[in-house]
Length: 90
Image 1 (tube, rainbow, N blue to C red):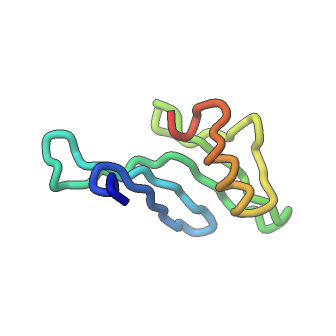
Image 2 (cartoon, helix red, strand yellow; image 1 turned 90 degrees about the vertical axis):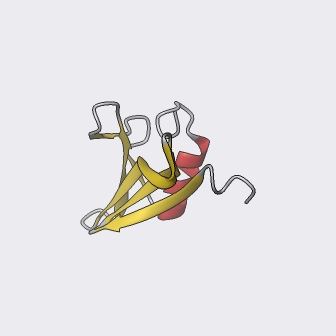
């Protein structure tokens, strides 16, 4: 809680996708907040699974190849939290 003004987490829901965000103050305008997408999952109705994506430096979403699908949102959150390869949080 004590660093929430400096770093926070959030999410957006877009259609069948959930995007996790890192929220921090803009460097030269700390009163403004910057939302940086970190991870994305999209529900695939046909298979009942969630596809996992990470955002590369080209600012495009790419499938997370070590684990490209998970069974639930909880599994997605656990995968992002572990961030074994440093793709989501750097």
